[in-house]
Length: 259
Image (cartoon, rainbow, N blue to C red; front, side):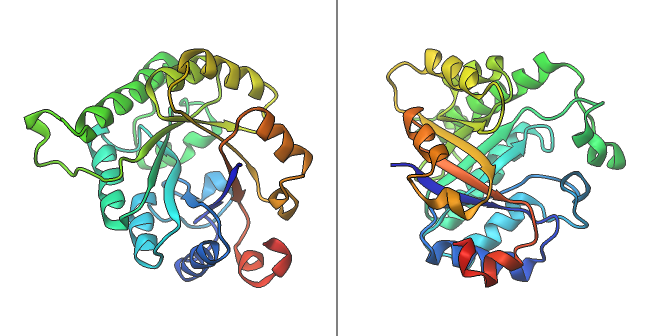
């Protein structure tokens, strides 16, 4: 059975409303609350933003059961070790399952790069280097969080349970990296090559335990397991559906039809 999660955007919603919405998501039985990782609200059409791990740490203190995660953390927004430490810290503070969704980041000419350009942050032009950075994060997290980790990691945060390492994909090559090195994959459900991404990942995964997630824009109809999209997800062995709420969360908080 597919677990249904939600994703909230801090780009156009204040902290007070995010806090209430996350508490309601827990009450309404959603599996997890995911947040975006952006420096500014502009790429998401908003006027503000909250740093994702700071936000998740705060949300961990106003909830008790709902799982938390990033969808996705840009591997170039932080030094690799800092990213892994941030995820482990939220995991420890929340005392529940944490999902570290990561992405390879945009190119310098991509529309998503406006926030990096504004603050003079480096944007990697090479797709190969961006993919290599994803693998670096996956490998270091596995080593640093291992139950029998090397002594040099002894004083680094050691989360329990281990966070799931999920790769958000938009290419077959990245799907194969996820299948080889991650704990899960996240595919854009409306992408025309979605099934190719899933197939490429499956070829690498084999029979080991693996988390298959998909995301799409929130609509209450998708809460129905009989919805055609939900049936198609079951056919493709999708374990979790992340429903992204891009608009202000007023409807989520006030309108019964949204849940």
